[in-house]
Length: 120
Image (tube, rainbow, N blue to C red; front, side, top):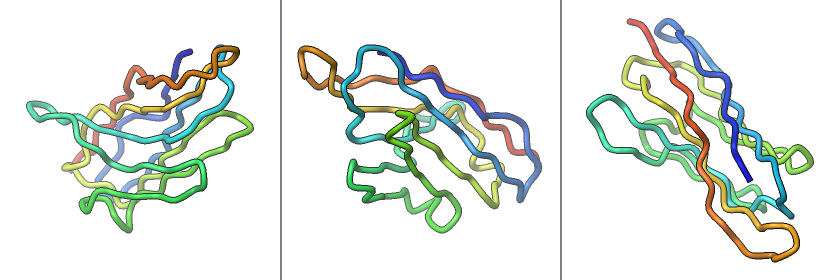
């Protein structure tokens, strides 16, 4: 099973981006999904998460600006980012708890990361 993230890029202050992360491979279903980010010289931090029941949570720094959503039919999680600031510059990683096909075991998977750069 792998996660492939896309949608990063360079945007100006106040701009918007939509990140996508699709899971593929021998999975039965995706469970909790999340986005993390790691800025240069800093530790990876949680940005947003969404449960199978669509309950969401956000880091205080992104509340009201970012929206996480999911499409279970496509095994995809999205992160809509609005009103971006230079402090949002980071590599964004998606994370998924998935249930494997056949074995029905749960496994945590990370995407490869996508770079978001916000210019001032």
